[in-house]
Structure formats: C-alpha cells, structure tokens
Amino acid sequence: MALSVAEGQAGTTPRTKRGLLWRMGRAKYLYLMLVPSMLFVLAFSYYPALSAIYHSFTIWSGKEARWYGLGNYRFMLRDPYLNQSWVNMIKLTLASILKMVVPLINAVFIYRLTSDRWQYRYRVLFLLPAIIPGVVGSLLWVNFFGLNGLINELLRAVGLGSLARPWLGSFDFALYALMFMGFPWPGGTTILFYLAGLMNIPGELIDAAKIDGVNGWQRFWHLELPLVMGQVKLFLVLTVIGNIQSFAGPLIMTRGGPGFATMVPGLHMFYAATQRQQMGYASAIGTFLFLLIFGLTYLNLKYVRSTVDITS
Amino acid sequence: MTPRKISWSQLGVHVWLLLMVFGALYPMYFMLNMSLKSTIQMNYGIFRITLPFEWSNYTSSWGQIWRYMLNTIAIVFLSGLPMLLFASITAYVLARYKFPGSEAIFMSFLGLMMIPGILTLVPQFMWVVKLGLSNTWWAVILPYIAGGQSFNMFMLKTFFEGLPEELFEAARLDGATHLSIWRLIILPLSVPILSTLAIMHTLSVWNDFVWPLMVLISNDIRTISQAVVFLNTTGQFPTPGRAMAGNVLASIPLLIMFIFGMRHFISGITSGAVKL
Image (cartoon, rainbow over all chains, first blue to last red; front, side, top):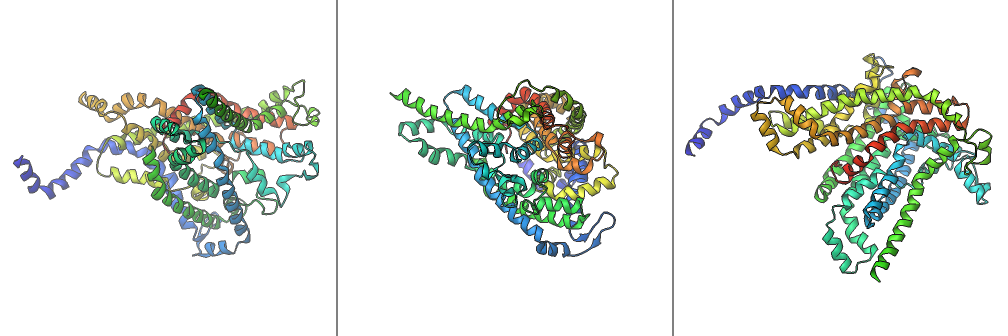
C-alpha cells in the first residue's frame, strides 16, 4: 500500500509523460481503425462547412473567389425576396408547430388501448404511408390541389364549386395550400417516439390514478403530457430546424411561386447557387441559416436534452 | 357496470383512431385509384372506381422507371455498407477503449451534429465538381458515407456500451485482436440495430431529392426521387394514369422493405433502443 503511494508520488510527472507515448503506441491499431471514418468526415463534412463560412465573405461564381467582406450579409438585409422568404418560413413553421398536436393525441390514444394487438395494428397502419417517397407525396398533393384534383372535386361535391381554383397557382392561397398538405397530419414515426415515452410511465402510477377516479382529461394533463414533455420539446426543436432547412417541397410543388408567394430562404439559396451562380451569396444565406440552427440546437442541448435523459 | 363503461371509452378511442387512419391512408387510395384509370375513365372523377382496370399503365410506366430503381438500390448498398462498416468500427473503438485523444475524437464527431445540410450544400457541390466527381455516382456515395457517420456512430456506440464487459474480457484473454473482437463478437450481436439503421439509410437515400438533382445530370444515372419528379414535371408520362402508376411503382421497394423490417423497426423505436 505504502509502496504504491510512494511510487505514485515520486514518478508523477515523468511517468505520465512516458505513459502517454506508451499508451499512444499501444493504441496504434485503435487509431488506425478510426482512420476511415475520420477521413470521410474531414473531406465531406468539416471541409465543406468551413468552405461555406469562408466563402460567405466572398464573391464566388465558380472559379476564383474574391474577398467581399460583409457585402453578402449586407445584401441579405436589402434583398426583398429574401425578406418575403423569412415571413413565409415563419408562417410555415408556426403551422408545423400547430400540426404537432395530432400525432401526440394519436399516440396517447394508442397508448390507452387495452388491447395489445390493436396497439400494434394502429402502429403499423400509421407507419404505412412512410412507404410513399417524399417527392411522390409532393407530386400527389400537386394533383390534389389541381383544377380537377381532390380538393376542388370535394368542394364541387358539396356545392361549393364556386370556391374551386388552382390552389398552388393562387397568390393568396398557395402558401396556405402548402400548410394544408398532408391533412390531417396524423404522424407516423413521431407516434412511435411518443409511444416510447408513454411506455415508460410506471403501471402502478396509472393504476393509482384509476383508483383515485381521475378522468381522461386529467390523466392526459397531469400524467401523460408531463412524461412525454421531453419528446414534445425535442420534436418542437426538430420541427423548427426542419422548417429552416427544407425546401424540396416548395421546389417541387410551386418553385417558390407564384411570384415569391411560397419562396423560403433555403430555396432562395438554392436558386442563387444553381441559377445565378452566386455561390458567395448562397454561402452567406447558408451560414446564416446554420447560425440560426446552431442557436436552436444549443438551446435544445441546454434545456431539452436533460429532460429527455431523465424520462428515458 | 365497470366493464361496460371501459368499453365505451375504448370505443371512442377506436373511432378517433380509425378516422385518423383514414386520414393517413386516403392519399394512397387516390393514388392507386388514379393509377388504374385510362384517360377517358379519368373524366368520371377521382372518387369512383372505374372498371376495367387499366393495368397497361403499370407495364408502360415500369419501362420508364425500372432503371432508376436499380440505380437507387445500387447507391443504397454502395453507400450504406461502407457507412455502417466504418461507423460501427469507430463506435466500437470509442465505446470500448480509453486512449489518448479518444475524448477529443468523440467530440469531433459530436460537433458534426451541429453542421446542418443546408450549410454544406453549396460548397459540397463546388467541392465535388472540383474533384471531378460531378455526374458520377461517387458524387452521391461519398457524401452519404460521410453524412451518416455521426448519427450511426452514436446509435451504435450507445448500443455497444450496453454490452457486458465479460464478453470482451474473455476474448482478450484468448488473444483476440481488436479487429477480430469487432468481427466475431460485436458484429453478430448488433444485427438488430444495424438493420434498423439500414432501413433508415434506405429511406433517406430513396427520398433524397435536392442533392442528386445537383450532381447527377445524365439521364441514365439518376436516382428514383429525381427521376420521378423529372418524368412528372416534364410531361414524359403519356397519360395522367401512367404518371400515377409510376408513382406507385416508385413506392413498391419501400413497401417490400417495410413488410420485412416493419416489426423490427417498430419495436426498435418503441422500446427506446433507438434514442433521439
């Protein structure tokens, strides 16, 4: 006992130094095993990210980039189409947040079923639409919103034919049509994640609540909602981040139009890069969106992550 | 008295859920219904089922679309296998060994979670062009391998950390090398989680639209999502019914995958094996 203490005290500094090299040498095969992952990540994740931030301060049309300082960022403030895009993005995001309620209700109801077999059946049924590729879903809704599509046919069927219009071609309605897409937004994988949270509720707690004569609403409010709050907050952040990033929907369905009625910042960035060769400006928009997402992820890690860990 | 009361509330829950299931599935109904209509039958509206079914829509669209399905399946494998291979090796090393720099390396993967696709999209495109990879499958495969590293590594690392230490101890005493421990112990045990991750990868490659749109230019190398949009929006499908048939066909491989992987996927997520 005494020996080991004395040894430790005597050789602290030199030992750790020699020990470090020795440990590194011993781990040489471990380092080697990490090489493939590291190479890919450096070449195709970290490098493009740094390149984006650097080029956001340049004029870059493809060949040589020219230093432009904060010019791109200054132009972002004055770009009227980008300003329109922010407004659209915020509206679409708020709509997505409201739509989050439906999967939560569905998950709670599936959880309350007493039959295991039906619980499983509903999970399968809600997951089934996931087999439709995203672009096919978008194209299908383009069809539904068309002149003789589902929405207008329904309106005609109930005698409201005068309201029928090409929804996606309408300045006033195109953005609302994008929000309406997917109605009634029942959710698929999200339901499964909520269920994962609900399943963690101890059975005794539910039994105790039942004995106390708690009604369905109280049970939701005081028992089920608090226990999936971690998931709810996480999905909230993921929904907002998704709305900041995604533009494939508007790209396929409306190309941002009519005019700029459904333009979003991501799509504006995409067009700047692919149609106008403004790679520097596109990088600046991308970097700004990154900072926005970074801020949200930070808040997520700081305030939300901990609650998820506690519940699961 | 009590059982009756319970069954009423259960009935209400069923009514709501069945309505929601209808809400989830009606787009599929209309897609299938329209895909079986001739141009003349389309005039009878989209609600009614019209006979005879126009099966030729499917044979015709299959000829236009099969190549892109094969392309995408090839890309799923060519990117998915190395992606999971590298991620699982890295996850194993970081989960099971402490060595100088292991924390820093782990943090460098953690940092990747902070890099959104929207930031790298444009420079990644320029980089791929500069490397001369543009308009080849490498332009999608290499970024997919890189893009999947952090998420898959985390999932696998969490899983590996949960494995009992005695397994490894015994193997090490028998003189097994790092790589053979990974191959003989880790890999067989992680088949369930690997298949869940493989399903997720397949979905994301199958659904990716923007990146292939930017880098795959020649018609014959396109992916399915890209091709479906291209064929639909440039009027390459001769009739609306055939366009819908093409859309249905594009969903079939995912349907097959779900039939085989659904049970596993559902229990994987619900049991919390896949943590967000």
